[in-house]
Amino acid sequence: MVGFFATPMPTQPLGWFKKPVKNAKEMVGLKYRTVGLAADLMQQMGLKVTQLPGGEIVPAMERGVIDAFEYNNPTSDMRFGAQDVTKNYMLGSYHQAMEFFEIIFYKPKFDALAPDLKAILQYGVEAASQSNYWTAMDNYSRDLQDLITKHKVNVLRTPKDIFTEQLKAWDILAAKLSGEDPFFKKVVDSQRAWAKRVGYYGFLNEADFRQGYEHVFKTKIPT
Image 1 (cartoon, one colour):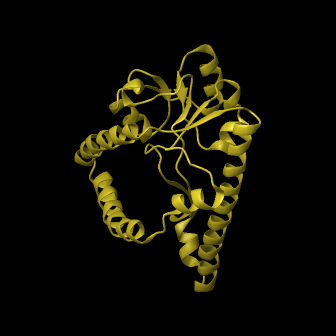
Image 2 (cartoon, helix red, strand yellow):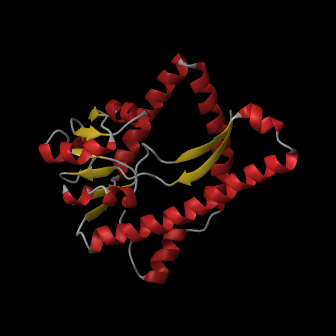
C-alpha cells in the first residue's frame, strides 16, 4: 500500500463530565469512555476506562455506566446528542492532541501509473486534506458556540495539572511500549526528532495569538 496523510484534526476535548473536574486527583476512579492508546494513558492516570463504540456512549451515560466520556469534536459530539445527557464540556487534552486520516492506494497499481498521474493523486490528497481541515475548523467553532448559546453547555478549559499528569503518564507508557515494540519506538523517536526541531521554531517564532485575540475582541479566553 501507498499511504498519504490527509485531514489533520485538531486536539480532541477532554470530554463530557457529569461534574466538572477541578484537578487531576478528581479524575482518579472516574468511569471514563475513550478508545485506543488514549485508554492506556487514562488508565495510567487512575481512571476506570471503558472502551465503548460511539452508539453506546449516550445510553451508558444515561444509565450511569460511565461518569464521563470523550468522543471527537464539538460537531460530532453535538450531532450524537452529548449535550442531552450532561452540560459540562471540558476542552483541551493531550490524550488525542492531533490525529490524521489516511488515503491509501494499492501499491502495485499506484507504482504502475505514469509520473503525472501519481502527482495528480498526491496533490489531490493534499487539496482534499486542506479543504477538510478548513471545513472542520469552520464547523467545530460554529457548533461550539451553538452548544454554549443554544444548548446552555458549561464549556470549561481543562485544568493545567491534568495536562501535567497526562504528560507524566505518557512518559511511563511511552517507555513501556517502546521497550516492548521496536516499531513503536522507531515511530516515537522519529516523531520526537521532528517535533523537537519544528516545535522549537514554532514556539519561538509565532505571535502571541491569545493576546491578540483578547485585545481585538475584548474577550478573555478561559485558562
